[in-house]
Image 1 (cartoon, helix red, strand yellow):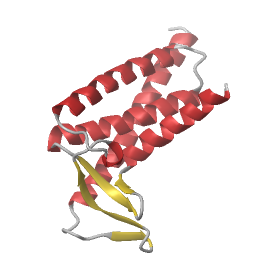
Image 2 (spheres, rainbow, N blue to C red; image 1 turned 180 degrees about the horizontal axis):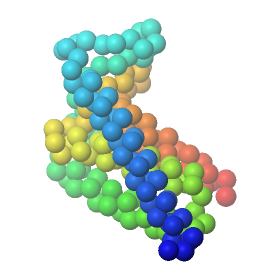
Image 3 (cartoon, one colour; image 1 turned 180 degrees about the vertical axis):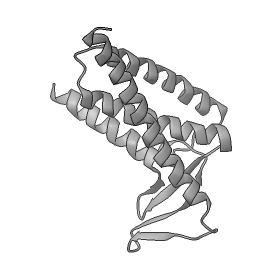
Image 4 (cartoon, helix red, strand yellow; image 1 turned 90 degrees about the horizontal axis):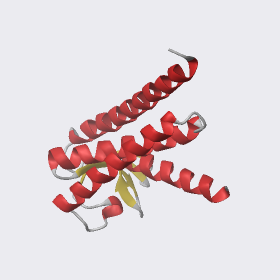
Length: 155
């Protein structure tokens, strides 16, 4: 196996590992939230930021769009995203930071869709007063997308 092929396989393994790690962390936090008693919250920063279990049947940021159509749309987006990441990983000139950000987005999307398919809703657990309740998967998707957009606008 030549050096270029080894580098390509290393990139595939690294992205797969990244996705698995972030997916696992989010799923662990969701399980931890499941075990909280009804109405119980763990204060993280005074009364501004807390950890507790919340059900979110809607789309991101509680936009009222739900059901099988949403789930199907998300699965299609995930398949397209995975295909794009494989394509980027196979190119030797794709920067590692870009693959990292796409991997974050994919890990978040996979974690939330697994909730939707298993429970029929997404488990949220981070409550930021005056904003919304969200989870690590939402952060991964939002931060990954925001940085990619910012980087591409600068080009």
